[in-house]
Length: 125
Image (tube, rainbow, N blue to C red; front, side, top):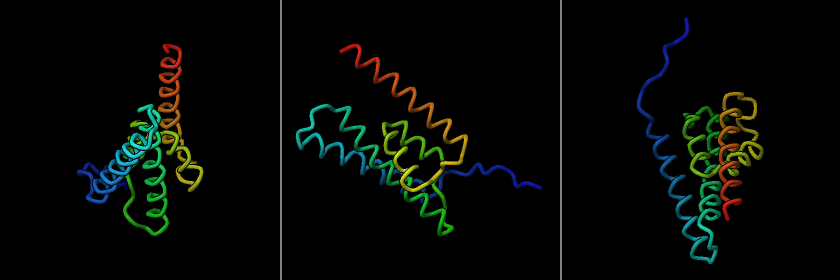
């Protein structure tokens, strides 16, 4: 008999990992802006992409050493926050979540929406 779904609060590992990823993303965004990269959107995307790639690598490591995993909602949340390029890079670089059809579909939807919004913004300029 299958075990019931887990409806617990996020684990401490998840909260710490997501918090550190957000800190890395915001710090890198600030550094890029201070270094002279003027477009906030590019700096924002670069920061969140670096964090997403890092977290995908951490989750792959956790899977290999049988540690507690980072939930897919955190991984997809980083992509949704602007880190979809880093999430895609992390998937390819670490060969992680590449066979998980639901994750690929959701990430593909996030990338399509962000691409459409970027295209609309570009046309509006």
